[in-house]
View (cartoon, helix red, strand yellow):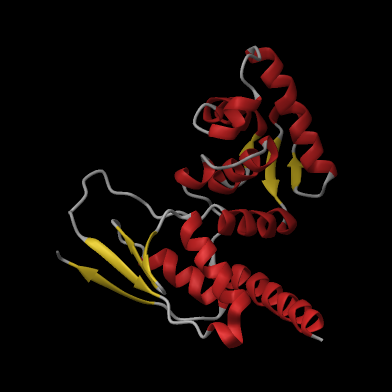
Length: 207
């Protein structure tokens, strides 16, 4: 009986998260999120999302250049010559088209590429997984406290996933339900709590 309830809770939580992702989060990823991407396909989609309908010829060199800023992708393509990277990039474009994630427009000499709705939904989920707080160049030496008062008895699964998400975003754990972070996380906290159907109370600590 307990296992069945847990399974039902996971299904409900997944449905809630999927709907919230579509309603709240923009599919255009930040530079910090792009740096966390794990596949060349995700990188191409992110760059096209940022530019809209764009020439294929301009996406490829930009993607290859951006590879150097992506930790996981840089390791995958380490040691490959530029021509080899270009060939992989070309295969990626056709893979994305065949997967229903992008559309090609125009003639081969001026081919352009755009995202499909399927790709936008995929990027929304990638955006949630890679969500991160933007860090200003100069820290104002102020700390932000995040207090998450979630009744674990009724919402244990959601509470565990919320804490895991804060940990993944490098929030510092102080004590039960209390976290701290050196940069303004209000936008990201609002997004995460709305996604899971909860409210978080945050405040600034000037000490």
